[in-house]
Image (cartoon, rainbow, N blue to C red):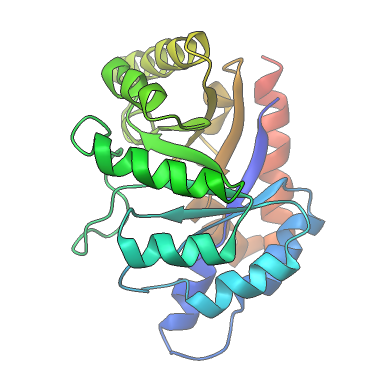
Length: 241
């Protein structure tokens, strides 16, 4: 069964709408852990639109499971990660004008830069994952740069329907199989919600599902702890199918 890691970025999004002190993503992380999640995910974006540097240092002190820092390969962000030393670092593409991450990292195009960042992070005993589209060439390139994990971008699957969604699910399975064949460990995430997560949870070999927006959205109506518990239950049931 894949583990559930909760992205708490959008707790900070709500806080930053007023530039105030609440709601606090650090408190949110504690509630998520109390509800049974196995990890906390945050993305320190270059424009600091939600998570701030103070948040990640407080989270590093307070998280009891593990902290996964999503990050670009910009030098200042890499320097912060090296100082912070999270349990996990996931390298993601980042464009200032995007609302959220719109696709996977182009490892082929940025191979030399990514390889250097992976090496520097690993020297600090930080496990590294690359957030990539489920494409065989990107998986091969990920192996070549020395990463520990990949995280398969599930956006195409999540945003499709019917036969197209079935095809995208098969693509995720093929990509997972290739990654494991090459010796990579596999996580997955992006766009997963309470309606579409079950088939992904049923894919054998995926270690973690990173989910944020749908859980925080659900929490508005039922509370954060219940929202996390509901997602864990769906993943548990789905993984048994």
